[in-house]
Length: 127
Image (cartoon, rainbow, N blue to C red; front, side, top):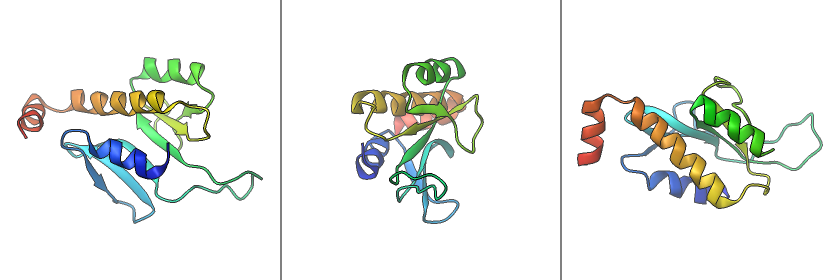
């Protein structure tokens, strides 16, 4: 999955918004003001490692499911620069099927949606 298809899929979610709170290089996708995914807009290049640039997406995750996906998919690791318990980093190295990637986005959205107040959930569902 490339950046644009990831972006479009996130924005299909009810009341999802794209924000750039730390500048134009990192897109954060939120619902009800809370992030469910974020990624760099341009491929991330690690100067110390000889490999092509890659994208990774940090996704909110239920802790038990986070561990399951890390065990199942090498492209899924503990969240980079986030809580390792509640976030996964998903590397778009081509090893993960789009259906699995989308399921992780769906899960991230649902985790955050369920964390919102009942009032906020109702507002989103009515929008």
